[in-house]
Length: 147
Image (cartoon, rainbow, N blue to C red):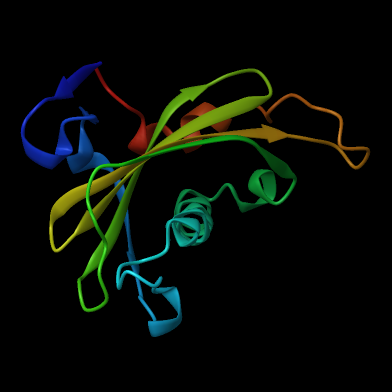
């Protein structure tokens, strides 16, 4: 994986973002913090909206509905402000036996401003990790990170 080291996007990997699923986020006044930009805690909520959109588009809602968020990393490299067009682009970085990793970048008016990596683990009714269903990797192939 290479890293784009230019401008505010310096910590955002240069991936095949052209293949990513795009989800537009509607900002609200209540998303603001005292400094007038979008509160950092809202980013995780926006990622949840984006993940549900990705799951529906890829036909993996049946798996995602029985999964838990095991890890979330967020790198903030720029601001989000009310009035900007916010788009989250998401790719599947890795598919394991019981989990998958999604990488996402936030764009504010087309400019990268945050990067996230999340790990979802498929679980059974007892919340014990379970194997992903056969064919899961093929279902997400359209948005896989490519070398």
